[in-house]
Length: 248
Length: 290
Image (tube, helix red, strand yellow):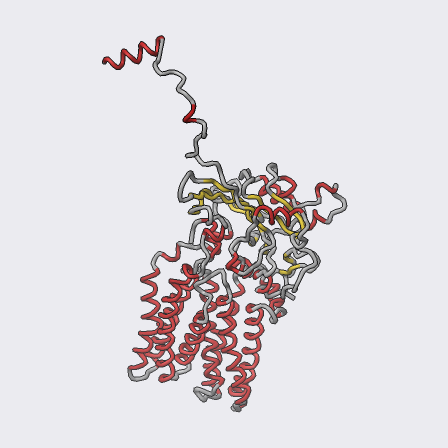
C-alpha cells in the first residue's frame, strides 16, 4: 500500500550544515557514482559530452546569496536531496504502490519494477528530490544509500551514505533523528536545525543547520582609538616626493 | 508545469467523452439502434481515445495495469478504476440500446455517476497537489466538471442545458483564473521558506547546481508556454464558451452544432494548455524561477 506508516521505528536521515558546506559538489559526484554502480537502475546521462548535457542526479548543490538588511552579503552553499518526509506526499500519490516509506527506518524508496514512470510523485514533491531517469523510464530518488548503511561487506566506517562518507568539510551527518539522544538530534537541538518549506506540511526528517552569524565588516578593534599614529610626517625619499608633489 | 500534448489531448477529449456518456446514461437524448451506435461510438472514441493518449507519457506503459491497485490512497489510481468501471457499465448499457433496443435505466444512471466520478478523480489528481498552488483549490474539480457537463450536453444535442452549463463553465473558468493568479503569492511558500535562509536576509539564487537543464526544469519549471497567456485566455474563453453558446442560440442545425463542438474543443484545449503552462511548481523557487 502507498499509505504512509503511522510511525516508524527509527527516523534515519541527514543533517546538513549550511555553515560548513563549502560547495565543492563532492557529495553530488559520490552519490552519482555509488548509485550508478549499485542498487537499482543506473543514473543515466543524456548527451554527456555534447552541446546540451543533462542527467539524473539524486543530490544537487545550489548556491544562494543572502543579503542582510545591513552588512555584507553572504554566500550559502545548499545541498539538496530527498528529505525522507514523515508525511511524504510523493508516496500517497503513487498509483501502483511502487513508492513506499519503510516502517523500520523511515526511508522512502521506489520499487523500480512497479514504477510506471507517470511522474506524479515528482509533481507532488516540493523539494525536487525525485528525477525520472530518461533512459530507464522509472523514478529515481535518494535511497539514503540503503545498500551501504546495512552492508556488512563494507568496513564499518563506510556504512554511511556515500555523500556523508565523502564530504571533506564534515558538513553532512547521518543518524537516527527519531532518537533524541543521537548525535544528529543533539546537533539539531544545539544549532537550531530547521525544516525546508514547513508550510508544505511534509514534516521532513532531514534537517538543515543554519549558517552561524558572521563577523561584520564595520566592526573595528576597540583599542584602535588608543593607538597613536606611527608616523606624523613622511621622511626620507617618500617625504621629499610628498613635498614635491604638494608644490606642483 | 510542462504542457505535455498527451495530457492536454487526454483531459480535453476524455472530459468531453465522459460528459457525453453522462447525458447518454440519463437517457438524454433517448436513442436506440443505429443512432445510439453513432452517439456511443463518438463518446467511446473520445473517452477511451483520451485514456489511451494519457498512457503515451508513461515511462512504462506496459505496467499501467498496476495502477488499479492503490485506489485507497492515490487519486490517479482512483481515476483508472473509475474510468474502467464507467466504460464497462456504459458499454453494457450502450449494447442494450444499440443491439436489443432495451434501456437498462439503473445501469445508465450508475454509468452516469461513474462518468462524472472519472472527471472528478482526474481533477483531484491536480487539485490535491499542494506543490502547485494554482491547482490546489475546490475550483479545479468545479472547472473540470462544469466543462465536461457543458461539453457533454453540447455533444448530446441538449441545447438548453448546454447553453446554461457552458455559460456556467465560462464563469467558473474566469473565477479559476482570477484565484489562480493570486494562489502562489498566497501559498506562503517562497525562496525564503524554501531555503530557510529568509531570517538572515533577502535570498537570491546565486548559482544553479547544474549549467544545463534537467528533468525538474523541463517538467516542473516550464516558463516558455506562458508567453501568450493573456491572448490564449481570450481565445479559450471565446472558442470554448462564448461562441458555442452563441451558435446554439441560432436555429438548430447539424452544421452549426458541429461548428459549436469544434470551437468548444479547440477552446478547451487552449484552456488546458494554460492550465499546465501557467501552473507554477514551488520547486522553481530553488532555481530562482517560477
